[in-house]
Length: 90
Image (cartoon, rainbow, N blue to C red; front, side, top):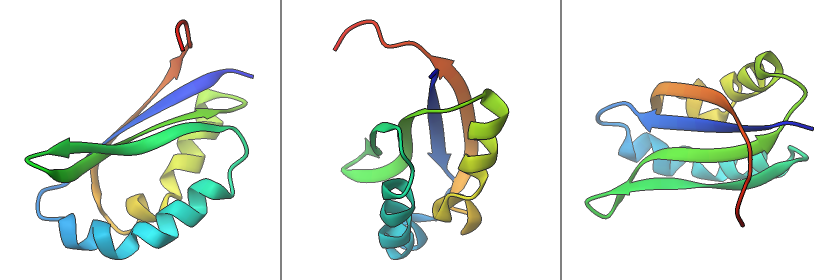
């Protein structure tokens, strides 16, 4: 199954919302088979976005799934890019 990278950048001023919604976001990720890795981008010691690598059927399927991330639904993300990704090392 192909891999996809979700590159998510937080909208300005969303740190408190991110922290409040984090438990729901982690639960949501845990329910998805095929999540390979996930974690926040860090700037000045604070989370400012997310990287998620996940298996999926298609780009459209993963984009649809990503739109239901609790962070996305709460407005945390200012921008989300979903691209097919191929693991070469690691």
